[in-house]
Image (cartoon, rainbow, N blue to C red; front, side):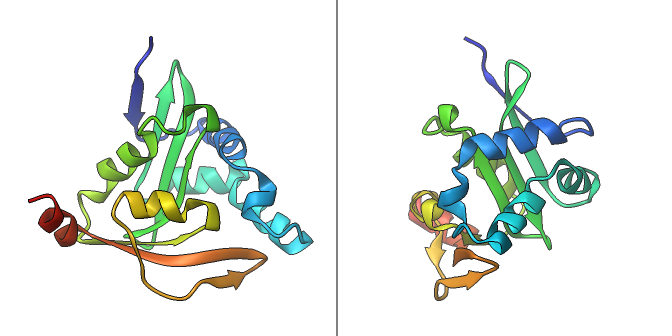
Length: 156
């Protein structure tokens, strides 16, 4: 069996990253189905948008299996986790956790606005809710924070 390889994304990976995002979650789980929310999702996972993330100085990482992108993580504004997706057929194998661990080691704190379907995952890796659930552009989000010191304290 081929192993998962973690590496920085490269120009040319943007189409595979987009495919990974599409295969990770159902559009109807992430949006309310309104034109505004669907347009927001289409923009987020568009290859040109992803290309901009790849060339930015923001922290990004892909997980590949047999040359196929099966996971992707991207940060914005330094420590704000903006995208974390793992293909459904590769979920529950620790790939999302590993992507996060490999990126979070440089941060004291990480924030995320978690989609409703991702809140439990983020709680499992140590995030705590940090505000009220909100609705923006047809998408529900829950503000959450992860703290390096709290993780260190809980593991001792």
